[in-house]
Amino acid sequence: MRTVLVIGGTGTIGSAVVRELGKRHRVITAGRSSGDHRVAIEDIDSVQALFAATGRVDHVVVAAGALHVGPLGAMTHQQFRVGLDSKLMGQVNVTLVAQHALNDGGSITLTSGVDAHNPLRGCANTVAVNNGIEGFASGAAIELQRGLRINVVNPSLLEESAEQFESLFHGLETVPANRVARAYSRCVEGAESGKTYRAW
Image (cartoon, rainbow, N blue to C red):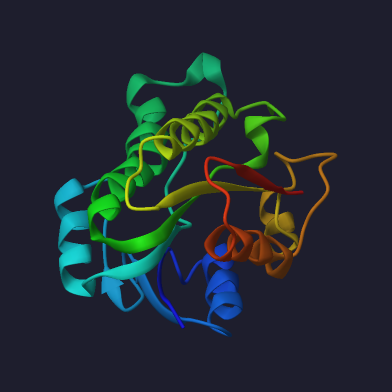
């Protein structure tokens, strides 16, 4: 049994990941306002404090990060920075700290999104951020030491969230959260690195 830290572990995806991995591993959760520990991933000091509190773990999963959705023509600099600072740099921050806090042979699993490969109206920020996450992981994979691995899960629109976001995702197939969770399980329990697993 390994120890897995799930950041964003009380969200829709995170909760499903906790249930799936909890069948075989010890799971610790962290989030901005809920979970076993508090963390704001866009704040590197907060991320460092999280790993100081948890001690060494074997795997970390990040299912957290904010994005800005809205038309490009009306988007401000600060609105575009929302996704860059939160979801992209937040997951980069976790990786930068986790590479020194994981046990040998551990793994980091990040989260992108379906619009990385299926651009949608109003999603210029999310498309840029999600592609950035996938690119970062592919580059980081060749430099991680001590047998550490890094992968990304790219989920489609969740069945559980379809009603809330259907106006943005017309025509895309929805997937249940428990199916998405199995992609995270593959990242944690598999052997590959630098890959993006599509849960579509």
